[in-house]
Amino acid sequence: MTSQPSVAIVGRQNVGKSTLLNRLTGRRQAITEDLPGTTRDRLYIPMNHAGRDFELVDTGGMEPLPQDTIARSVNDQVRSAMKAASVVVFLVDAKAGLTPQDHEIADEVRKSGKPVVLAVNKADNARLSLHAAEFHSLGFGEPMPVSAFHGRGVEDLLDRVVELLPEPEAVAKAAPGLRIAIAGRANVGKSSLLNALVGAERMIVSPIPGTTRDSIDTPIDTASGSVVLIDTAGIRRRGKIERGVEEYSVIRSLNAIDRADIVLIVLDASEPATAQDTHIAGYARDQGRGLILVVNKTDLLENVDMTEYDRNMAARFKFIPYAERLYVSARTGDGVDRVIPTSFEIQSERAKRIPTPDLNSLVRQALARHAPPSAGGKLLKVLYATQVGVCPPEIVFFVNDPKLVHFSFERFLENRLREVFGFAGTPIKFTFKSRG
Ligand code: GDP
Image (cartoon, rainbow, N blue to C red; front, top):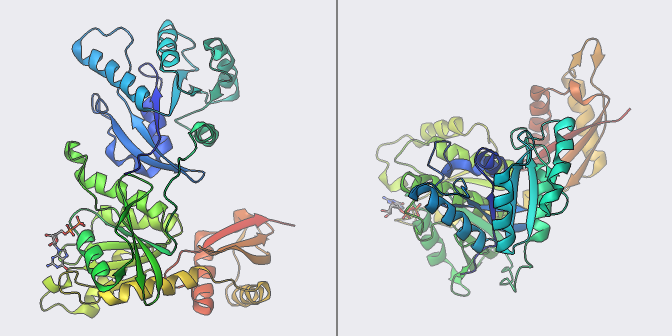
């Protein structure tokens, strides 16, 4: 299996390593816990930035002068994290200024011989950012001011980290085809569904490791076209993370979602949908992926009114009303044959381009039907709309004042757009820009 380059964040205690980690990993923070001692084991969090995959290593606090065995082992862990890391982010604290401990850690970091990004945290405002200059003397080049708490400078930091990552070594060329991720929490039947899908189709080659160590790409040849199934089920290699198995399954799903066109959100028909299920679905939506709710284990449903069942399902996932819903049994094979064709249908919706004149005439009609919002006597005017992207479709509206656009109005426009142009199964991205 290919392993990803890893990035370690080091620094003395209280400089904000956990906060920065949570900020960098965004919604993937499920396996970190904000309790003392819980970050003492190294945890890896899969990341993707600017098209590069890597892992963030979560280390415990670093204590240059270990007083006890726990501290010593934490210190060892940090060293070993740096040893394994391709890039080190050395974090210091703008509010506290340069401390002797920072110098000691700097020596460790230097000894590691790794590319280093020096980040100065708690640079919450311009005045504190000025303090960043004092860290020049550490000898790691230009310090980057960040505020892990407020999110300032974090994108720039990631850009710099990604620049320093080693060139991907002859990464196995991604197989061509529609990329379908099989996502979902543990035990909903992801592996079983994969097997059912593969069993029904012709596997071209044996599964190959994905570009992350937790997913396996399985290229298959189907009547609808070439497909790459991105499977997250994998081995429970990190079962050691005690209360983390369920969360880890979710994190792996997020990672697979990042690399997919279409996401199968696999659910267990015999259990109510959980917050984890909606979390995964919400993430797939935010990433603009095609969405299919695949309700598995329908063989376990007895004497169930499916119309009502489906209505409840729609209500539970009402934040993605356009998602397709398929009812399957990986065990009996029922309904499985719909999965691939539906994925291709959604992909063609995702790739659709609406000609600008058609889009604008729809917007004009919609505005005539529904008075646009106003505030303080100022009326929203939509001057012009144009589709600027596909997969997912992205539409820009030029308006007199974006602040006048309310959620309900956006929802209304989206509904009208879907009534006329479809876009079944895919999120649509809307942007409102000021013009005039
Ligand atoms: P994963 O963790 O999501 O990959 O789930 P698995 O594929 O390992 O399945 C978890 C459990 O659910 C296993 O015991 C499967 O045999 C069972 N299972 C999977 N699909 C079905 C199904 O369609 N019907 C029934 N009754 N059980 C299923």
